[in-house]
Length: 228
Image (cartoon, rainbow, N blue to C red):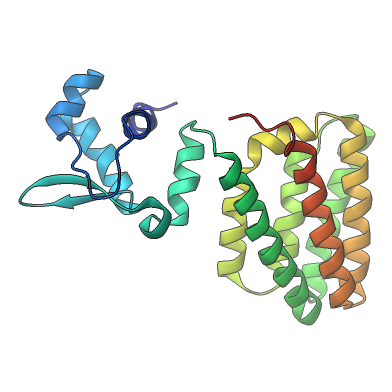
């Protein structure tokens, strides 16, 4: 982990452990630098990152303040927390899966309307790569991501692709664990083939139902076991 990420993690952990609430004034750059034994420049960069994702507000006349995270912080704030090594809460995991299902379902509906031959070929390439990995007895977590991004890309909506990519960043560790089991990889690939068949036929309702079941099933594997 880079020093920047480590400092962000330490600031966020400090905020959690001290139970700061929305509107509370936070320690200054100097205070954080002394507490974490890093330079003020490193702290300044970390705070700037947290300002960018609307976790912290800098008031020029009085210092740094915590924003209302549930209402004001951006989705990127959750991604940043995950990237720097802070686990999501069970509620955040559940809410992120619920949101991902909505986005994936809409993406596949749009894909059924808009996909062209190039889009179908890209999805097929991801499926072919998955089959090669399975034949080698290797996990398919990267190929799984490629399939879903190719599917989202077929929607023709680049913002939707970017949003879904953030969810794959959030679930990266969980999917790595999930696909360590060979049976999970084979089952996931079989479901991908069904989804692809529905998209190829432009059957939006079937594709949407299949993708919702596919995403939810993987989450259910973790939900009773999730321990932050």
